[in-house]
Image 1 (tube, helix red, strand yellow):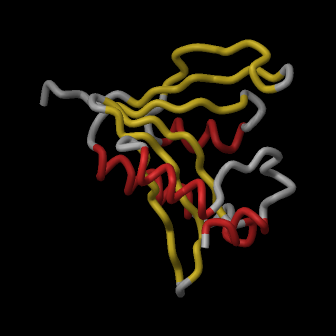
Image 2 (cartoon, one colour):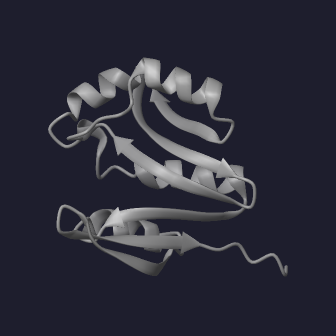
Length: 135
């Protein structure tokens, strides 16, 4: 199902690394690899590939089917992820991905660093959402 989703978005994922084989290998060999998959009417609508690393989670990739973008699906997935992991979450995003940055800010992600020219000349923005443990 994940491969089907990527085929639909192949023009946006230049170096797709998610295939059924890779996902299964990752889940079998990497104890930190996790997938949150959004399924609607038996079809994969989107997913979050993340690493659950002891004191934090790191979002590696978020993908939403083109026909379901701008409908709140990514928002729902991030909300669910924050409920599931209940810890600090980090991610990296291209600085020109304004829609994604806006989405992350809705969940209190803050810019913590810049990787200059990381994406073929486009800066990568490192963001973090911290959990207040003092409550």
